Length: 232
Image (cartoon, rainbow, N blue to C red; front, side, top):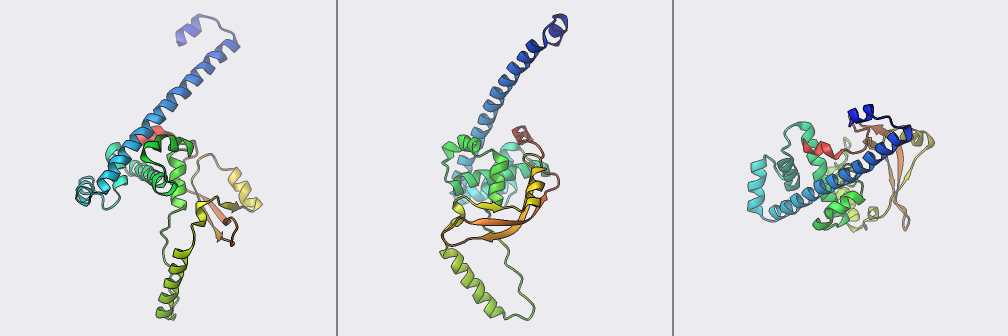
């Protein structure tokens, strides 16, 4: 193709038209690739759920992959042949994204490919899963405090949380001071960040997160998610 372009003179507009045609073809190929990749993730998720439902198969599979508990993560490691730390991190993100789709959003396994596209891909869903992770460490007990009273307070707080409705199932508003908003504007697309702030849940109103600090995580991607990376 390059020899043809050199041998035959073309106007600038003609050359741009050719590039535009190639760009559109690239988009079609890329979309087909992503859908095929997402379909493989959906198929693997279906098998992982079948294995997870049977204790004997679950233990056998986890042992074969060298994992302790998460069958979906183990399945992602298995199908991607993830050996390096970076590859296992990507497998972990895929597992978190798939579980979030199925267990939190309620997407059926058959609809995973379309849902992954609609919700922005593995990277964005894995980030949402991390933000909505209910696992939190208990606060340390202050020296000299009454441990019995502390334990009762913890149990009371747990009962209160259990009785609460899932307010974060709906849209959450994020409050950003001007300086932090300017900091966000300077970040590249798909940059992974850590947010520190206060959760506000007014009765009958939309929950908010009052952001106090934003930190860009070192080594985070500063470009749009590239699904080619999942082949590692």
